[in-house]
Image 1 (cartoon, rainbow, N blue to C red):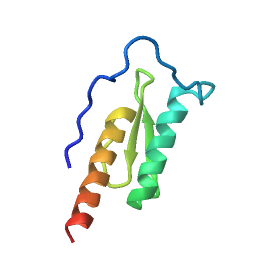
Image 2 (cartoon, rainbow, N blue to C red):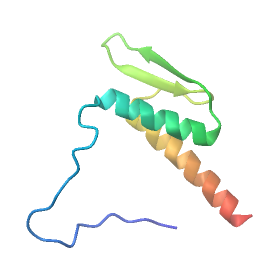
Image 3 (cartoon, rainbow, N blue to C red):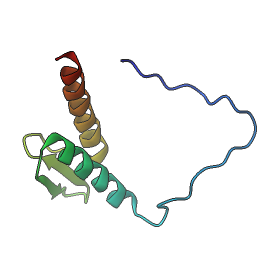
Length: 88
């Protein structure tokens, strides 16, 4: 199934949630990675700090990447598994 992103239909102002605004971006991204890894049966995420102070993550069996690239790869893997289960 292909999913597309389109502009919202409503014009003018809109309401947004302020939930979790007190949680740091890093904690949110790490929580997403942990949830995705749990769904994929991956029990460990390694992290390393670069010489420039950037954190890179490596779920067991993957390679070190930024948090957003790690999340993208994990979601692609999860989508592949879901598609394979749908076909069987």
